Length: 202
Image (cartoon, rainbow, N blue to C red; front, side, top):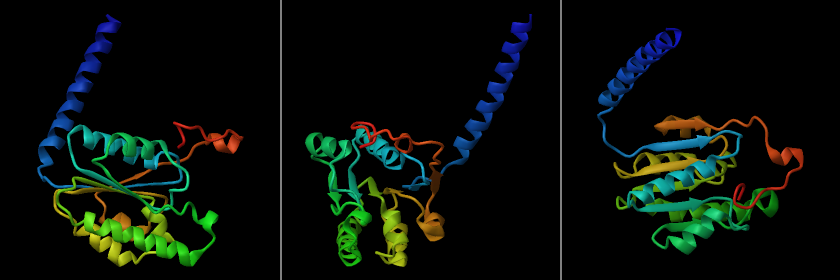
């Protein structure tokens, strides 16, 4: 008898939840690409973006990935895309992290060169998904003109989606995005002295 009451209560709760979900789906009638910002100090922002790359490729969508900062150490994502998916446009700034280069002028030049690669892609309606990995740092360090970056992203083709990753990015970037998700760090293996793991961390 108690179990029956629990089952009935659960069923009513799920019916109510389903009705709410169905209503929200019905209300979402606008069909267009979305702009997503994955930010925060936790691990997994780029990994989430590459998950969306895999999802898009599963539907036969045209995808490109532009990586700012990273590039000196090969990642599993890069190895896979370059070896298995020649149809994905992949470009890396290739300078490594700013604390490695310690050369602001060279970093700015590299950032601007990489942004120049991204601009035509953000204007090409044939691309369904554009990933701008670690772009937020370029804005935080003022390596790129923020107003130009926001304008280009805002005026991309209607059905093109864009994913931006990296900590911070500023209120201006957050303001133009449709979805902003923050990845929060609770604990990290590296801080416990555990080395980064191939296939998990890179």
